[in-house]
Length: 299
Image (cartoon, rainbow, N blue to C red; front, top):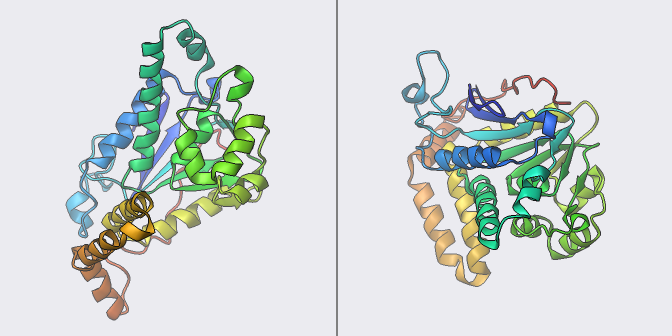
């Protein structure tokens, strides 16, 4: 089921797989792609979490109601791309056009792209990036917006903006948050290529796959996330953002309030009952989850 010819959605159990499918332009961001991704992730954020009784969220065809017009948000979202390049960043043709526009038009375009990244970052469902190839500029920003990044060892990354007379302005908050000021300063200024091992070392990549093992590692990562409660995962993301925003000294009350609310919630009560009964969690055994095939995407 697709949103447009360049962005596709597939339902795989409790997981929504979102595929950027514009290999002819190396999956670059044009205005349409930015708008579609922003709408997709913002829409998911306003949906109800999956209920404990998934029968209430199951459609006539047996799939869960988590697709493009779904009522419920998916348990996990996988973000991937086709072809040899994960994302080459902003579409250079449009960037050239914007160079002829006035300041306000450029400001609006930058804010629109920033809103797309923030929609990914703020999505209550965990977002897992499957990085099969190179990413440049804004493509690295998209990766940094995701919660967990699973990458092929041979993937390469670069903040190439300064060599084009540009700056990585919109993605800077995401990248600095993920890899820190020192690493960001180094790679923003030099535009040096970051290989897989270095990306893992500095925290840009969370899990690094050997050749041929990308989907094995991705599936393992998603299964780990599926063991958490669908609603609780979103609350946990809010907890992390709140603690970071308030800092250690001021976050004590927030942390206490969130655990108190979670402890009395239906997911915790049901999961604790299952644990004491030595039974699987109410959201079931996800050991058999697999990623749908991705033509043109290396594994």
